[in-house]
Image (cartoon, rainbow, N blue to C red; front, side, top):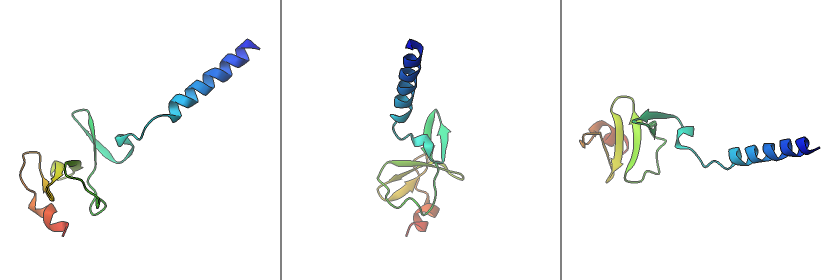
Length: 86
Protein backbone atom coordinates (compact mmCIF):
# COMPACT_ATOMS: atom_id res chain seq x y z
CA UNK A 1 0.00 0.00 0.00
CA UNK A 2 2.87 2.38 0.83
CA UNK A 3 4.38 1.84 -2.63
CA UNK A 4 1.08 2.80 -4.23
CA UNK A 5 1.01 6.10 -2.32
CA UNK A 6 4.63 6.80 -3.20
CA UNK A 7 3.85 6.25 -6.86
CA UNK A 8 0.81 8.55 -6.74
CA UNK A 9 2.75 11.28 -4.93
CA UNK A 10 5.68 10.95 -7.33
CA UNK A 11 3.36 11.28 -10.33
CA UNK A 12 1.67 14.35 -8.80
CA UNK A 13 5.05 16.02 -8.20
CA UNK A 14 6.19 15.31 -11.76
CA UNK A 15 2.95 16.68 -13.20
CA UNK A 16 3.17 19.80 -11.02
CA UNK A 17 6.74 20.48 -12.15
CA UNK A 18 5.92 19.97 -15.82
CA UNK A 19 2.79 22.11 -15.74
CA UNK A 20 4.38 24.99 -13.82
CA UNK A 21 6.85 25.92 -16.56
CA UNK A 22 6.50 29.48 -17.88
CA UNK A 23 6.28 30.25 -21.59
CA UNK A 24 9.65 29.52 -23.06
CA UNK A 25 10.81 31.88 -25.83
CA UNK A 26 12.17 28.77 -27.50
CA UNK A 27 8.61 27.50 -27.91
CA UNK A 28 8.17 29.80 -30.93
CA UNK A 29 10.10 29.48 -34.19
CA UNK A 30 13.58 30.59 -33.15
CA UNK A 31 17.30 30.50 -33.74
CA UNK A 32 19.84 30.01 -30.95
CA UNK A 33 22.61 32.63 -31.04
CA UNK A 34 25.31 32.43 -28.34
CA UNK A 35 23.01 30.26 -26.22
CA UNK A 36 20.10 32.72 -26.42
CA UNK A 37 16.79 31.91 -28.12
CA UNK A 38 15.98 34.67 -30.59
CA UNK A 39 12.58 34.51 -32.32
CA UNK A 40 12.69 34.27 -36.10
CA UNK A 41 11.66 37.42 -37.97
CA UNK A 42 8.34 36.99 -39.77
CA UNK A 43 6.97 39.93 -41.77
CA UNK A 44 4.36 41.41 -41.27
CA UNK A 45 3.35 39.34 -38.23
CA UNK A 46 5.36 41.53 -35.84
CA UNK A 47 2.89 44.40 -35.54
CA UNK A 48 3.19 45.14 -31.80
CA UNK A 49 6.90 45.79 -31.68
CA UNK A 50 8.61 47.35 -28.69
CA UNK A 51 11.89 49.23 -29.03
CA UNK A 52 14.67 46.75 -28.26
CA UNK A 53 12.87 43.67 -29.62
CA UNK A 54 15.34 41.30 -31.29
CA UNK A 55 14.72 38.77 -34.04
CA UNK A 56 16.75 36.50 -36.28
CA UNK A 57 16.50 37.33 -39.99
CA UNK A 58 17.74 34.77 -42.52
CA UNK A 59 19.53 37.43 -44.59
CA UNK A 60 20.66 39.95 -41.94
CA UNK A 61 21.25 37.76 -38.90
CA UNK A 62 20.20 39.25 -35.55
CA UNK A 63 18.17 42.42 -36.08
CA UNK A 64 16.86 44.88 -33.48
CA UNK A 65 13.83 47.14 -33.65
CA UNK A 66 14.72 50.48 -32.09
CA UNK A 67 13.26 53.98 -32.47
CA UNK A 68 10.87 52.74 -35.17
CA UNK A 69 13.71 51.37 -37.34
CA UNK A 70 15.36 47.99 -37.92
CA UNK A 71 19.10 47.72 -37.17
CA UNK A 72 21.63 44.98 -37.88
CA UNK A 73 24.10 43.73 -35.25
CA UNK A 74 26.61 46.43 -36.29
CA UNK A 75 24.12 49.19 -35.51
CA UNK A 76 23.39 50.12 -39.14
CA UNK A 77 19.83 50.80 -40.28
CA UNK A 78 18.45 48.12 -42.61
CA UNK A 79 16.73 50.26 -45.24
CA UNK A 80 14.99 47.33 -46.96
CA UNK A 81 13.14 46.26 -43.80
CA UNK A 82 12.25 49.83 -42.85
CA UNK A 83 10.58 50.48 -46.22
CA UNK A 84 8.54 47.24 -45.93
CA UNK A 85 6.86 48.31 -42.68
CA UNK A 86 5.29 51.44 -44.15
